[in-house]
Amino acid sequence: MRRPLWPAPADEPAPSDEPEPTDASAPPECDPVRGSCGGTFVEEQSEALPIDPVERKTQAQCGWPADLDLEEIFRKMPKAELHLHLDGSVRPSTILDLAREQGLTKTASGRAIPDTVEGIRGMVEIGLDCPDLETYLSTFDLTCSVLQTASSLTRAVIEIAEDASADGIVYLELRFSPLLHRAKGLTMMEVITAVLDGREHAELMLPIRLQFLLCGIRTMPEDQVCELADISWSVPALPNTDAVSVPEIALITIEKYSSTLHPRITSGASLAV
Image (cartoon, rainbow, N blue to C red; front, side, top):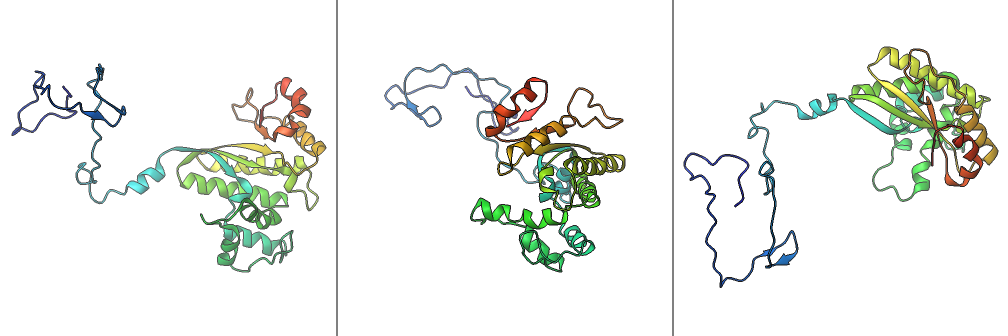
C-alpha cells in the first residue's frame, strides 16, 4: 500500500494498511517505469519519500506573499561561478571607454569599432543562433583589442567582480590567456600582475573571492605555452590569502603539450587539460 506524503483531508477516510482485494482474472498491470508487465516484484520503498510526482504550486498555494520577488531572492543567494572568461565579460560601456582612451578606431583584425554602446553590444553579444565556433570567437577580437594595457586589465577585473557580486557571486574563477594581451609590449608577467592587482582591489571592496586560470592557446607556439606554465607556477601567493598550499593560478592547456609539461606536473604543479 502506498502511503501518501501528506495526511488525508478530514472529509476523506485515512488509507488502510489492509491489502486491497485483487481480481485474479484481470490482466497484469503494466508498469511504465520498470517497462514490464506482470511477474513477481518486491518493492521496497522508504515511507518518507513521495512516489507520485508533486504538483507544481503557485506562490499563493505555497502560502508565500504574492509580492514576494523570487527572482530577487535567487539573485542574492550566495553562488559560485566556476567558468567565466575575462575577455568575454567586459562591459560594453567599458569597451567603448577604453577604445576612446586608447584612440582605437579599429580592432586588431581591422574591424571598425562602433562609437556607441549599442554598437559595441552588437559586436560582442552572440545569440543562440550563432552558426559556428569561428563566429562566436570573433567577438573576442574587440575585447582583446582594448585589453592591451595594465590599467585596462585591472579595471576589467574590478568591474567583472562588481557585476558578479551584484548577482550574488561570492566565489569567482576567471580564465584568460596572457599570450593574448602582449600587442602593446606587456610581458606575460606584467599581464598577470595587472590582473592580480584588479583582484586585490576587488576583494578589498567586495564580499567576493577571485581565482584565475591561465589558458594555453592551441595555436600558439609550444615554447610560449611552456614559458607561460613556468611563469604561472612561479607567481607568489598574494599577502593576506589562505592559498599557501593551493596554487594561486592554475594553467589550462591542451593535450598536445602534456608530454612537454610532464616534468612540471610531476614537480607538483597543477594542470587542467
